[in-house]
Amino acid sequence: MSLAATAMDGPRLIVFSSLFPNARQPRAGLFIRERMFRVGRHLPLAVVSPRPWFPGQALIRRLRPGYRPQPGCLETQEGIEVRFPRFFALPGLLRQFDGFMMALACLPTLRRLKRQGYNVIDAHFAYPDGYAATLLGRWLGLPVAITLRGTEVPHSRQPALRARVAKALARASRVFSVSDSLRQLAISLGMPAAKGRVIGNGIDLERFAPLPRDAARRRYGLPDDAKVLISVGALVERKGFHRVIECLPALLADEANLHYLIVGGANPEGDMLPELRAQVAAAGLEARVHFLGALPPEELKWPLSAADVFVLATRNEGWANVFLEAMACGLPVVATDVGGNREVVCRPELGRIVPFGDAAALTRALRDALQRDWPRQAILDYAAANAWDGRVRILLAEFAAMHASAHA
Picture 1 (tube, rainbow, N blue to C red):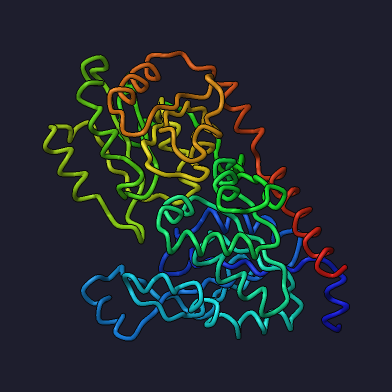
Picture 2 (picture 1 turned 135 degrees about the horizontal axis):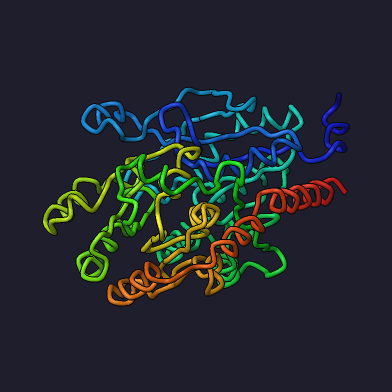
């Protein structure tokens, strides 16, 4: 079949993201794979996940085993091919050239995929991925969608990167964002409002559902009458586990049987586990704070079902899908007023939003949340209303429109 004939069949997606699960980093970018592999059940899809590289990188990895682990050149995940081309990327200030170098390195791969009939590029994060994708789209004559996921906020505060983000948005055919706060940021950077659309992440109701609380608590050795907080995320400063730990002594004055579950591990941003353990020890909280490590998604319903309240004192978020995962297990959410958090925790019966950096407000909100009788069914119903099926239908319609416009 000729390329022209293939183009008439409908969209065939190239998912373009440097953050994607692989054999050495199985939890990197799971939220992207979750979203796009669901789209891939309805239309052809290939993944290109460029990896940074420079000469001598292997020597650094001997001293820091987690530094830029290199997956193989090709993996097959759930029947979908995932390619990992390398691009030249020096650390430090020279990372501002990552977008161009990424595009240059990936050009042969995307040219081959275009010959195979792939006709729409779907990039995740505006920089460097979206910037590179829009260059590739221009070089190859392909429409490009960019999904904004939250890194655009800190990038917009750096003049050099802000300009590159703005250029990527200007060149993109369509801009999706996981929250309206990110859409508004894009508009402030010059994106026409009509180009953007909010398409949040969804929730897998088969994977996330409440389990019997007594069984879940026995699994982690928690008393039946305990009050239990839980946070889930990478153990990095941005996620704010240390900010929650700071509140625990004051909370223990009212809730003598309080416990705090921390689920998560290191990621490319770093690993605060040693600092968090030291903070817990200094406060004498070793018996109250439980580090459960990183868990696969299918196991998260166990610690969530053991808890009373989910909390994330995060510094920056796009759309925290973990909020919906917690709600699907019946938990109210306490979160900081950053990014799209207020858009997820959008009603009083779902939880509380507090100012970022206000330890007293966070403590008050947690105390109230632990003592309040929450409408569990309303929380479960809200999670169910955000299931993946609706999100996927919107994405399929958007990609079909992009393809039709490009081939009109």
